[in-house]
Length: 364
Image 1 (cartoon, rainbow, N blue to C red):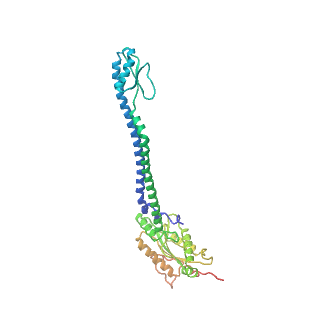
Image 2: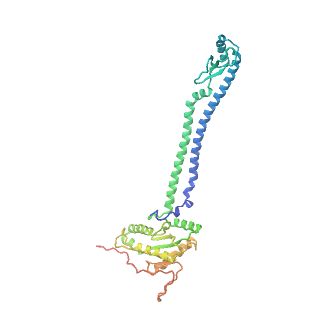
């Protein structure tokens, strides 16, 4: 029934639950910022480590270049002892001569281009202070940083779940506020919202006020529970007469209001009214197969002619005229009372159907 009784009144424009959507987006943005901040922090630490190692290596190469200027004039027999002394003074690890460049982690080489040692290479093991700092401090600080970032993300996820729960609760409250608790149809508040929206959009629509005939005897004879079941069944029957985009609301005990889009032709609206009357005349399976009711309708052809409260008053006046004629008929708003003694049938009046028997059930 809910699908058939329309989506007009739940459009986002009139859905206050959407007020929480910016909070949800901000929480997602905060989660993203926390992840980006964590990534930037890690990348920054790696960059600082690499930069520190590069600066240290540049200083070491400058010192090796100065040593090369000293040892270029030494003989091979003097080179080893002198390099050991100069390496210790310059703070270079494993400074030595080699016939070829050495490869390996941290191993550096610089060629000697002249002198007795020309063609050989000064080699040493480069210091890597950035890596050393990372190895010393990362085992403690990286897990701590991950825990902090994880805590922030956990708080944001919890907040997001809380926002979603609030949205669900507000959505449920809105549905409850806009729906009739018995039939599940939209209620009077939803009806007002729909008519206001249609008027604002200048969409043509017609309003029909519907009221059951001979409904009170069902409550009197079978109890209010049977009456409630009859209303639920009748709501389903009336909903089945609607087209896509049309609307049915329960506004009172056995009173309904339909908003339909069938053009401005009296014949089309009369056909819809006759279908509703025929649907209501079938026996009520929820009460008893020999129990029936009738239906009277008041019709306002153009819903844009008057504001919402006036529309409902116009439809109610037409409905009361139809009920005055023993019910099970319909009347258009603005129609005049037919002449009782003449055969004239003024425009706006539907022929009255024969009065149906009062709801009744046989007892043993």
